[in-house]
Image (cartoon, helix red, strand yellow):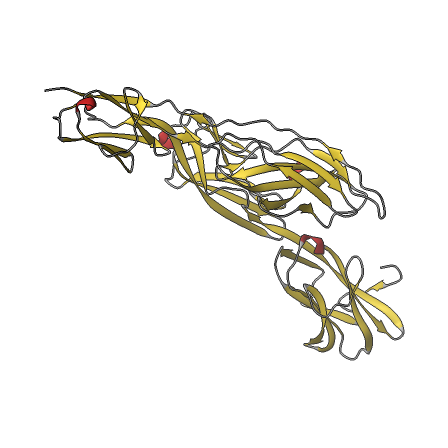
Amino acid sequence: FPGLSEETEDGPILFSPILTQKYVFVDDRFFVSCYAREGVNAVRITWKNPIREITEKIGRLHVEEGNMPPGGVDIIFEKVTLRDQGRYHCSAIVDGKEVSKSFELHVYKRVSFIDTPPIQYAPEGSNQLIRCDASGQPSPNVTWHRVNGTSITADNKKFHETPEGLVIRNVTRQDGGVYLCRGSLVTKYMSHFNMTEIKVIVQYEPEWKAGQPAEAYSFIGGMVNLTCEADGEPAPNYEWLKSFIPITSDESKQIYYEDKKTILEISVETSDFDYFTCSAFNDLGKKPGKPQVNVEADVDKLMLKIEAPEEGVEQLQLIGYKVEYKKEDQEWEESSFQEFFIDDADFVLDDLDQDTLYKVRVAARNEAGLGDFTDEQSKRTLKMMAQPINQHTSTSPKIVLGLLPFISIIILGLDL
């Protein structure tokens, strides 16, 4: 601060603990005491952050009268945020002159995995990206391991690490299992690491189990059970047909379903001596397509109108949206983000700088994971009393649910 003399540890005011630099993580809590050296008569001890004097007595960041030693003033950080980073000054009046002592606060963000689904799916035969979004400040280094001990990096033909995650090439069922994504950050003064488990489930078409009978025998008035059983991921659905016409349960026929198996129970009539077909199929859910987004600006906020992507009728239900935003001179790796649920009343980015150009992109999320981001949109927040400017851009590509081919077995009834 202009006009204030910066004192050393030999000066009239001191810090407890002694420090010139302080390194903390987001959400940490701590305090620093500022007090006069013994024998020094100091009055009006105050704390200033990089912007203003701190006068609040309660709250996330406030000051209190010090007790050890008495007569000082403590600055209290109950929950550190990234915005707290900067230089903090304690000043006092000593012998009619204002003196100051300061420390620099450095804030880092621990490694977290907010956008990493714990269960992810990989269709057999595909090149599948297993997502791991390790975020932190500074950006963490990511490494991969398998719980069964199989090396990830030794076989570059099978695995490929990217900034978005781990690509498994030509997925086989042996690639299923639990993977560990580990994020670590190291600075000159602090380090932190975190890891998350990701269960990879390999999806494959239904396959008939061995030993399925091709014929069944009965008599008029008798009972016969026709059974078909298949493996598949997801677990197969079944449909029974007679002469290729779908069958529903009625007085003479009952259909039962068990895990990966179905049974058709028939009270045999003359018309039942025929071909019966059992089809097994499974629906592979897809990640959602890109939503449609319109952005409107206010003085210190951006308001988003988000319309859900158009999907097939069998598509997994949407959970919400992830909105990433950054200033024009930043890279997307430095962007901020906010998560919204699908039923939130408003999609608003608050506490932005006024008269500043921001870039925004949005991705939809369902149980299969996070979809692709929309093309970035640019919008400038308004100056005070300025009129909002509307800008409308949207994209709406579609993802259509695909069904795997069904596998049939024919069971022949014979008139004896």
